[in-house]
Length: 268
Image (cartoon, rainbow, N blue to C red):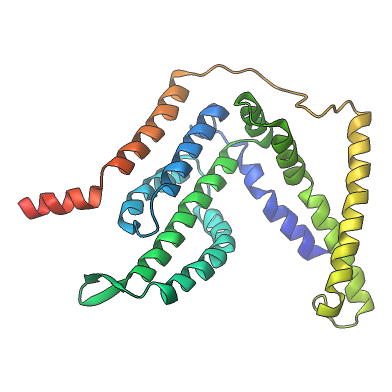
């Protein structure tokens, strides 16, 4: 059970950071949400070979992570979880796209390699932006901002319940793993023969626990919406941040800084 407890503690670390007092923490949640959305849409709008166009977007995590006092090691640790999935997809491009895209220092770079590196960089930028948003914004403030932007209530409710009670699900998984190990001798994990029944039992236990949690919430007055919403006007700093990030993203989307730099150097 100690392993499960450590996993829950790591899961809630980012939420604990949301109570900080940095300049980024004090911004309006809606401003941070809109700026993050603009950054994500811009990064995802590039084609699969635009590696050079994506590099300037490193400014977003490089500037905001120190500004928000978020541990860089923590962001990197969370990135490691997401990168293997993108790396698997990128490696398939190495086999499919073997044509030479450009020569760099005597080495031929294929379109597949450019696509793979672009996919990895895109994933790092997007995941880092989302993690940074969670690290500087409380979940209650984030969901209130989503509701104020008229996001469908069902999606906001699912987000709240998933984030709040994933620790409960983790605890149920830990209890079942402990029981399985006690009955399985020295087994370190769930045997493949028992994986189906294990997942099925976990699902049934999760549904039962969810019903009890929901019944307790209904007894305390929960009606499917937010119980505590604090209205907060935009300050000049909020407007400035909400306008600056999308403006920088638009400039980087329309202007190829790498090509512009090469032209300037070529002119010199």
